[in-house]
Length: 506
Image (spheres, rainbow, N blue to C red):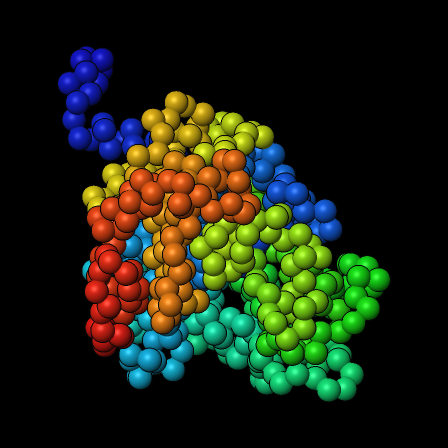
């Protein structure tokens, strides 16, 4: 009788629901660094800065060698990651401050609209608890881009990218509550120093990264019995440089024979090379604490952990050749590993980023993937990994088959970047070729450039005149893939008109 009853119920909704409850759901932790360069981790060739936790993560999972961010700067890159729509379709394509169009907000960036669909919304609708901890940058508290309005049950951290220039800020946010932190705060920008440069002059009492990683540990512990999606956007190694003295003291005093006086912006520092290394080392420590929290909760075996960076390393500045923006010495650390360009550029050094993914038992340990992928791919990838249906209209394609070692049909969707800042730039990757055009918002737009990234990964040899058919293909892709965006216009000669600037519509 019991067997007959079981068979009778076998196709029922009740049995299906019970089966779903018994099957452990996959958790997701997506960790994003801020301005971390392609060559700044040990597992990507870094020699001076130890990153043992991230190196271990790579040894336990898959390391990507040709992965690209969504944009060469913060806010649009995060928009591409969270919405799965590349810069030809993304709502947010630059780092525009919200107050330029919405004067009621005193901090935050231009907001995502109510029409935006984020991966967090899809996971929350599927019953996941969703958390965003760290830096947001996609809309002020109380706007349509508020993280709580974009699918996150919990937000803790910096809402505004400009406030995140300080590691000792006046406040952080817990959802709509402003959490006081430092009184007085330590601003991330001060006039250049003329006398002695002292580290202690730029240290406050409440170090924001410590508060944020503790919040991440608490989130994991509190939600260990139910599925969760955690977006963890750390601020290291974005400027300004003021890590704790103990972190700086890990590195040789001999590295720094000259202080950085603030002549290229942000805060002065007596030991700029050691300070920059300390920020990356601290980032690695944060990742170690998150991995340890997963272990302590018994979740490591069923949590997909992904680590990447929002764009390439900090760019040079012209006032003092030794020091780049904010005092960063990218040459000393070989931060781009020879790639051309930096943050703010659609060359490889601005877009190619570290990407590590781990899921024990599903992603082969110690594996390396050298095929092209980018941030737009992660929305459909995370959905497929969790067994959720991805929405229509995404620009990326799932990497799940590649991650799990199965045969992948190959890339069939174009990779597109349409970036209105730093003079206006576009890039299109087609197979192993990348077409680039710069200075599109200047009086003299640059010509098309074309690089064979397989033969010339450092983009030294422009092949545009030898392959006009590939330039024609890039133009056709842009005609097909770029929507009019009046808030973030990029005039592409011969392809689209120059739209009006910054209307007050999110």
